[in-house]
Length: 266
Image (cartoon, rainbow, N blue to C red; front, side, top):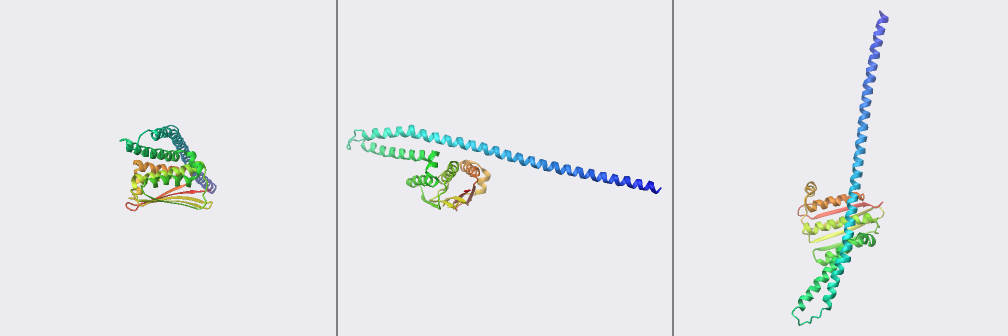
């Protein structure tokens, strides 16, 4: 009888151990598959981000190539045509007492301004020039044309030893600057703008653009994502992300706007 009880206890014990091992095996398999699924999900997210980055990079490269072609076309065709028209107007035999003299002189002045503005536009669109003269000089040159237009007061500062970015980075930063200024001119109603480039040794570059305009609700603008300014904001965020930078916007209705782009130099 005692031997029989021992066998029963042994069978119960073995059953318990087998059940315990089975539960442990099932739990281990569940944990294993969960971790495997999480790893696969992370891999899918990584691949998706890489694909989106590659698509975005291609789109931006096409955009830059298009701008470059437009700049070349403006310079080679339209610019030269305007220069020929200016030359013909300069040698036109019209005396001062002629009734058309004043109109011709005004037209010559307007044509001269158009040619100068066309040259400025061509230079700002041509990516090779941005890379050749450097980021600070390209921005300073562009700001000079805004000063001449008398649209607003401009303050420009470049602090520290200028770091020479790769062509792609310098072009992306310049395009972000252009987008910021475009938004300011179109929407801010600002009277003055401060542009600052700060090179902190070999660590960080910061571009800050501050205006005293009407400002806006940053979160509302991010959520809407509509309109030209919303698309412009998205474009700046994409460009900053592409070069490992960070875009920060501070603004409130009636209190102006400050936009900063921080890019690690290493």
